Length: 348
Image (tube, rainbow, N blue to C red; front, top):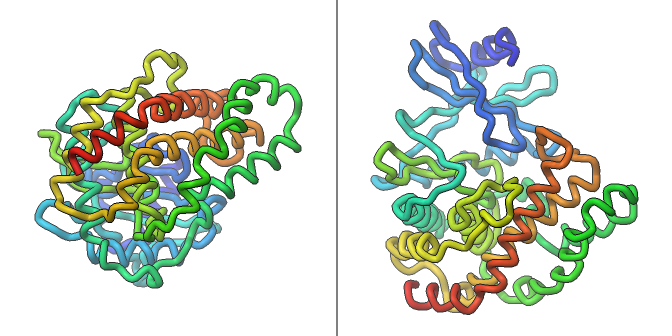
């Protein structure tokens, strides 16, 4: 952490910078995130946006501003982008892009949970998010990360990677490569279905939800990927991170479970918002519980075979560990399709 640089950055925004300090937040895989404290009290979130991953910084922030203008309700907490002294919502310094956002006092995030209330609240928040944005004009949002959750694209990238990577890495990842190849066709029907597009968050892992001290859900954060998508992307992602009670890079695969009581609580939370989905959307919810962990596992596997160029890693095998964990949850979701469908049909 370069304190002098951080001070230079925050001085470009319309805030009082006296008595401020910084703490690194290490949860994200892509952006660099810092908690800005004033007089030892959390006040703002400062982020350096990874413009190697996010190429369209202007469009990305246009999407965020559009969505934040609608994500306002008594039961959905509001966050704001702060303006620079030149009336922009991000600041450019040496080809690095920075933004400053409000911090919700006493809010917390969780990587995993065993608490049905947190599962319920995660479902309620994601349902509320989609209800608040359900009438948005899709054409008002830019596609800032093409093919982000489009498995056919990642399948092609995976096959390209297999041709280019070295045999040592392929040998280490042989089981995962075989599983990927065996299951790639399992999701063809999903992409062939006539599902309606919605404005989605597109990265709804549990640690992108904020909660208060009483475990009440507040809102979604990390809004860089807000754009067009299917509700199933948000649904499948929240399922994989709420229901398993294990970290995404868990090495002990026996710890990865499909906790039915947490899944039921999550569905109850979604349904507490009232009707949202049509029949065909509901029919494809069960397979999305497997689609999202499978796709994220495939991306982690490809990144491992590419030399870890996309996701942050703290050790060389971390992306392979992520892949193994994600594929294990995908297996569980595939095996539980009948049970998942019964719960969804009963509760939605």
